[in-house]
Amino acid sequence: MIYISLSKHQIITIKPFFMKITLQNFLKIFQPTARKTKNGHFVNWSEEKVLLTIKQMDEVMEVKQCYLKTGYNIRCLADELNIPSYQLSALLNRKVGSNFNDYLNRYRVFYCKDLIQAGTVSNLNLKGLSAKCGFSNRNTFTTAFKKFMGRTPSEYAKNYKS
Image (cartoon, rainbow, N blue to C red):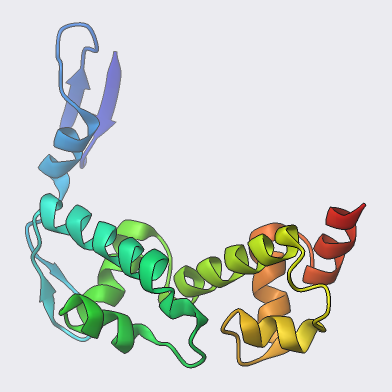
């Protein structure tokens, strides 16, 4: 048996063999229908709209490769998706579990990783590689690369060649 405490006086008992409920439906019970963002705006989306928007975000990033544009920001992506940037920010923070910069930099870093593995950037220095991947700053590039890959771009390139 699993016990979940909601407050001092509410306890739910779940009997796994007798009660068939999906985790997604279970979590819907506890989610408020409207959530207030920091600036006071409400975001009231169905789970279907959330999933559709996340899918559209990923498609925009993968197909159009907007992350390669230096200066690409949350407003640019929000305009592509035809939603307000504050709602996109709330969606990323609450549902994806990432802020916009991390979301964007993850695409850039994995693009860079693919370039290194393909051997197409062996003639570029770190500044050139960072610019090719959409970063405007070499230090930001190195920090992001290390965050997502566990090592610096130079270390990754050396280890990949070996």
